[in-house]
Image 1: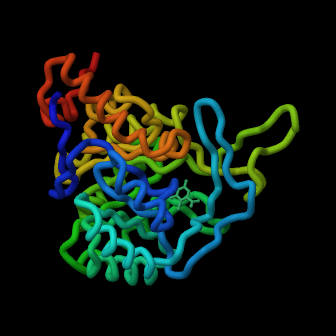
Image 2 (image 1 turned 45 degrees about the vertical axis):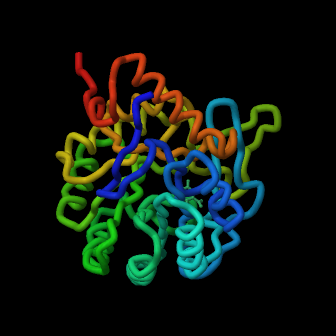
Image 3 (image 1 turned 30 degrees about the vertical axis):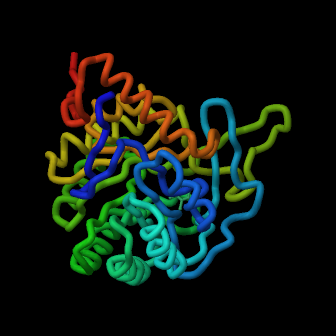
Length: 310
Ligand code: RRO
């Protein structure tokens, strides 16, 4: 079978498929399950300075081809994840990824600094949590994005990446790409869930989740075309200077193959992990290997970004 080993920002991964920040990655127990699974790395839940319970329940809803949630950043606080990174590093031979989600520039500085000194291999800076009342997604505020990045550029040598919200307008892509290229950003992870969507239960005539009058982040199969468009557009705009991690609606090897054609260096799995459990990482990677073999490709590199236009 063709190998699917890859690199994100120079860090080696044994396969193309790892978990995304979000589902089932907030506690040590959950992270150990990811460690033992086929996930090529161990990504931890986005953290804040202090521990958080998150939003009121019910705060997630699973449906046939998607998922909506407004979790509200439930996490144990960044100090725990600094400790977890060290424990996980000892137990497992795969890269550890931290994710930080600040409420201010100072929060981002403090947490990035802490993870720069930790055993984490990569630091994902979350600019796109859609579920905090009264807080805009940083990635939609270009001035704030610029501001935060200027303050975290020189805090250490570990690669720093940005978890981006989905963009829909070419001028927004261009602005964010310019900002990324001006700063020390080694990878992007695209996309986070589509924020502030609404799923209605017509029987009950009600929203399906409680926080924020039912508005929440949409993920799963329904968002794949948006994820693919974001990866492809950033692939074209960033000119190979920044690694790209694709996320959004990946449940099969074919989905992963499409992200590879679009230009992703690796993919992360959120909703499918939530729905199916930790077997999904190995399954999706195996399916991707089968597709590569059938098509006569020997590596990820041979296909990456090779999308044809009509
Ligand atoms: O915890 C959440 O509500 C959450 C986060 Br931090 C995020 O980045 N994306 C998302 O859909 N939910």
